[in-house]
Each structure stands twice: as structure tokens, then as C-alpha cells.
View: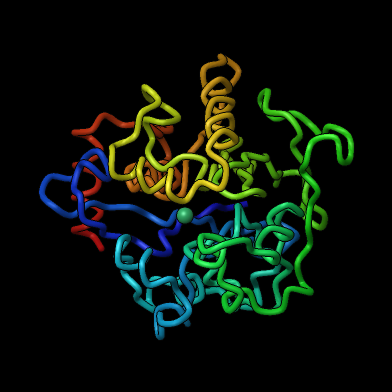
Length: 308
Ligand SMILES: [Zn+2]
């Protein structure tokens, strides 16, 4: 198994360090951290799809104008999953499974680029997204991005609905994903959306947990629990259920504080985490650095920007 870390929608919102905690000047950096996993017997597996080719070629009316004005993603066809994996040497049909942390517009844009893939998501997310209530729901969930929903395979993660599931480093109610080996797990972290879940993947270096949008800044999970003010405001704005989101984050923090928590945990939108995880995966020696000091984080971002 090999795991590629892909930024499938680098964003350059205004706000500098008030948004990302590190960037000097007015422009901040957020990532759209997705995984491309080469499995031994199940083809390629994507964890989230970022912005898709059609989003990049013709953003309106596929994407919500207000969020796009705020996040300022680089909508570049060459940065989409389908183009990136072709560059690595794969065909789109090699992607047989897509595992979604949730269905927000910045995670689901590539679904339609892989019509042959089975799409795995939680039952709660599928229900909520197909029955939007109010303006925020209709803004975040874009039916035009999904393609044929008959290929959706839902996993019931709500407590009590089908027993308690398994535990994963102390996190409860974790579920295996039908059709995939037990190296892939759904770890429910609701709040950002009703069916939001982390996706755990066991790679050559042990377990990692893609926590999706359970948090936006590394310090929320790995540091003092706070986020830079502008990103904290965006998180609150997009949270479906504030209390549930705080509870998910608290459970994540508790897990990370236990000595048994021998795993890498990262979120979608922290660019420092993205750069650290990508470097860790590529190197033979570096330890996982999910929460580098701000100065180190800034250097890493600058080097990454120069290489891009
Ligand atoms: Zn997001």
C-alpha cells in the first residue's frame, strides 16, 4: 500500500496569520488535503476529492459564490484529482472506491470525474445532504457535483442504531467500510455536518486519521485548543451543530493525549499539516510532525510555495 497526500484545492484567503496562524502579510494558506491510496487488491482509493475538473473549468454555478469569494481557491484543472493521478501514471478507472469525510462543495467536487467508483459515506451525511434544510445546507451541498447517487454505499454510524461499533484508539462507534479491507475505517466526528466522519487508513507506517473538517487549525487538536480568529469564525459559520462539533474535537484531543495514540492525525484545511504529512510520507526518516512550531510551519509553507 502506498499513500499519496494531495492538495486538491489550495486556497489563498485574505487574513494572513489571523486565518492560518503563520502567514505574514495579507494572504493566508489553506489546503484541501485528500489522500490517494494505492491498495494491494482494491485498486485506487481516494479519501475526499477536493475541487473537481468541472469546478475548475466552469465554477459558476457549481460552486457557492460567497464561499468561493472568501476562500479564494486556486481552481486550476492541473490540480484536480483526475489530472494529478494521470500524472502519477494511473487511469481514472483505476479509482475503484472514494471514501468521503462529508459532502461539502470543497470535498465532493471530484466525484463526478470518477463515475466508475463506489462512493462510501455515512448514512447520516447521505440523508442530510439529500434533504437540505435552509440556506446553509443548500449552499454547502451541491447536487451537481455528485453524479449518480445509486453508487453511494452508506455506513450507519449513529450510536445505538446497529450496536456500538468498534473502538479506535479509544474513539467509539467506529465502522469498517463494506468492500474495503479493515485498513479503512469510518470514525464518526459529527458536528461540522450531521454525518461528518474521520477516515482512518492503515499504511506502511501505521495508522493515520484524516479528520476532515473536525478542526481547521492544528492547534485545535494538537495545541492549546484555540484557532486563529478568522478561521474560527468560518468554522462556526459552517458548523451544523456547534455542541456536537466541540464534543468531537474534545474526544479527538483526549485521544491524542493518551500514550497509546501512536498515529498521525491531520485535518483537511491546515496547510502546515498538509506540508508536514506530505514530507513525512515521502521521507525515510522524518518523524510525523503534525504540529510544527509556527516558524517551522512558515518555512515549510514558503518552500512548498516555491516548489509549486
Ligand atoms: Zn472543507
